[in-house]
Structures are given as structure tokens and as C-alpha cells.
Length: 487
Length: 151
Image (cartoon, each protein chain N blue to C red):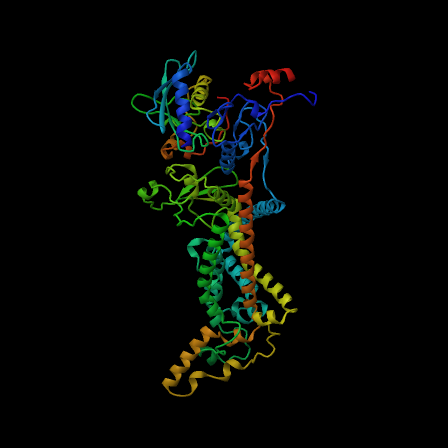
């Protein structure tokens, strides 16, 4: 074929028939408002671009159909999509994919861990992890004071507290336990006396520990623990608002997860139904907003896809209860990757906190303000070893005085923490701040990813192709002679 | 509503051009459920038998596939075929992962007709009883694995 051979395009067709919606458009009776047509493949099929994009999107969201999404069902030619797909979105997609691969590894490792645990006892593993988490989060110094590596030194509550640490971390990521995170890590430890004191008189351990000053910086761990649920709630609400603003969606009340689908690898598989009573009337009622969210605990990909769907307002308003999108939306998809990312991510938190805290410490060398905020202290060199035995609060005075002293100690415990905590370098404080920064940054990246993905979807176009290789006689053209002569 | 408009066109096509041999429209009272009768012509194991197909459409049709199954009631039975469960559910890839909006109701009927025609031996799928016991009402909720397209 030489270069000036005329190849007809979709615009040269006398009658265009969309292979998806089966609507026709004659060249002499154009639709108003016009809809774009496209000929995306190598055969004679043509379609409305919007129909085709809708098909592609819906097919891509279904793992079993995804591989056919960008293929012509008749000639098998691959569709080419053009969209605003900036480098950063591709990067984030890749990061997401690699995290999923890591997630799969974590799942595999977790499974192996469970199998091993049956031999060694889940308890031992959870406890060791708890001890590790405490060390990461509170710092080596505190750890040596409160726990030490030798379990025979541990206070009794360590045996309850420590194994709960991994469990609480994982649960804290589910939306059922919004307020739980890190509580077992903290709650018991602020009131715990040091264990490795060589010269501690046995009597002193019966008495309340010597209080620290009430108004101290950083705030006491107990105070932080109490404020934590409040802070998280505020943060989550804020994040949701920013997200809806960015994605142009309206917040909708959450709906109960009706079904948990466990997908082992990419195999379709076991469906475990959670017998949550769903009011059949409510179920049949038209969906009010575009979507409900089975938030946080969900596979981020599915999540993004759903988000994209409602961003475009494609979600059907009067969907039937059986309609796949609605079923999917209340289905919690658990894949190896999502499970691994979920659990692995939770268990990584103490290490991340430790790392962020160390980074903050390094930064604080250059900034006096940061040093203040972090309350960096040199070391515990000036810790008074005899502090515990020095004052026995209950030893002098009448009952009233004793009561007053007791109250003061309790107040101090909440507001100031124990002396141990007060006098140590507050590693836990900078770790908490570091973790907070990490969470905010991570959420910002997630939101950016979501936003870019949405924009990519909105700017998508299917590449239109001329009818190369199709015999012009097979086509019902407006100017058949011209095409015929030219070919 | 996209599904209604497209189904209207398909119905009009059936009414003006008729249906292929062996396939008859039994009822299409609304745009949610249609019934067809289907016969396999020629020398096949199903010679002389008549079956009924039930199509259920949701509002996303043709983006989403129709739910198709053989009718099992007093009058009709599901054909004894290695891809058809005794409750009428069909394991065919074009109804699941290979569905495409280029397909029509009639195209699905023709495909299923030829699936029956190529059957050499009357038998139920492996694990039929277990599947039928736990099967959801809507076959689209089942995830079939398509491995053998030759039967």
C-alpha cells in the first residue's frame, strides 16, 4: 500500500452500529448531542467510545475477565488506551504491586509461622514479638529498665501484655477497633516499676512509686494513651473529608460487610459467608449514594477501582440487590497479598516508629526547637538509684494524709507518669511523633495515588484506528466510490 | 436505562428476523427474564428432547453478562451434559470470563445449542450432587473453572 492510499475511518461509515449498546447512527442523521465513535481494532466492529470505556473498566475490575478487557472479542486485536498517566502514577502503581508481592511473601511466611507456632506455641511467639515491639517502641534504655532480656525479671503483667501486642496491632487496623491501637503497649507500662534495680528494698515495691512532677514535657504516656482514641477519630474524620473533597464524592454511611471472599492466590475459591443479618428491605432499597465503603481493611486495588467508579458517577443509583457491583462492594476480598500487607503492615509499626524516632533524633541535632519538642535528654545518668526507697509516702502522717498522698500519686501517674518514665530519655515520645508523621505521609501518598488513578480513568481515550486491512467493500461507506477508486 | 434499550433492539430483531432453527422464544414479558426453548437437531444424544433456557438480565447488561440456566420444573429437565448441573446451572466460559457485549441472547442460545450437539455421552459434571446442594440461586454467583471446552 502506498502512502496516499485512502484508508476509510469510522467517520466514513454510512451507518455506525455500536457493538455494545446496539444503537445506530446514520451519517445524515447525527445524534444530538454527538457521542464519539471509535474503531479500536482490526475488524469491522465499531462502538461508542463511552460504551467501550465502560466495558473496559468493568472488565478490568473483575479478575477473571481482566485479561480480555483490552481485546477485541471478534478479531482479538489489542485496544490501545491513551490517558493522562504521569510517571508518578506509574511509580505508585509499581510500588503498590511490589507491596502486594511482599504481602504475598508475608502471608506465606505467616502461614509457615503459624505452622511452626503450633509446635512452639503461639504464645511464645506473640510474647517474643511483644517484647521486641516494646524494645523498638520504648527504646533500649526503657526496655532494659522495665523488662530486660531475661524473662525471669519480668513483672507478671508482661505475660499478659506482651502476647497481646501483636494481636492488638493487627486488630487496630480493622475498623472495628478504631480506638484500640497500641493500647496494650502503653497502658500497663507507665505504672510499671523498673525490674532491674539491684538495691530495691522489698517494702518499696508494695508502695506506690514516687511520683514525677505533674506538668512535664513530654506529656505522660498514660495521658497520651487516653488522648489517642480522640486524636485518631479526629484524624480519620479529617482524612475522609480531604478524600471526598479530592475525589469529588459524597460521604455515605458504611454498610455491613456481608461476605468475606477468601481468594487463595489468584485461584477463585472458598466463599465464607459472614452471617450478618441484613435487613432485606434496606437491601432492596435503592442505593442512596454511589458507594458504601468497606474501608481500610480492603484490598487497596479494589478500593481504588471502586473509588474511581463512583468518582465518575458510574455507579448505578437504582442498582438491584443482585447487581455485581453492589455485591462486590459489600464483599471483603481477602487475597494472599492483601492479607500479608494488612498483617505485615501492622506488625511493622514498632520498627517503623523506632526508625522514624531515630530519624527525628538525628534531625534534632540541627534544631533546638525540635530538641525541645522531642524532649531529648542526654541519658539516664542522673537517675537517682535510691529514688524508690527514699520516700515511702504512706510511712508518716494520719489516714487523711495518706489518702491525700494516694490521690496525688494517682493524679501524678496520669499526668506525669512515674519517675522512671520521667527521667528517661523519652524515646517513646519521639517514636510516637515519628509514627504519627509516617501515618500522615503514608495516607497522603495513598490519596495521591487514588487521585491520580481517578484522573487517569477520567482522561482515558481508546485509540481510534483506520480500517487498515479491512476490505472497503465490506464496509457501508458514505462515499463508497471514493474509497473504492482509491484502494 | 441501557439494558432495556439494548434488549428492546434484540427482541425486535428476534421478532422481525426470527430465531435460528431449534430455538424458540417462549416468553419475554419484561426486560428482566426471558425464556427460550432449545432443541438439538440431527443425530445427537439429545435427539427429540426439548429444554428451556432462562435468561436473567440486570441493568448493566450487556456490560455484565446475563444469568443463564436451564429450566428445571415439571415440564423441563436440565440436559444430562458434563457442563450442566442437574439444577440447570451451566459451566460455560462465555457466560463468565469470556462474556463480551458483542454477544447477544440469540448468540448465547446458539452457542449452548452447539455445546449440547457436540456431546457424545450423557453424564453429569463431577461433583454434581455436592454443587447442587450448596449452589446459589443465581449461577453468576458461582465461580466456575473452565478447563474443558471440547466436550
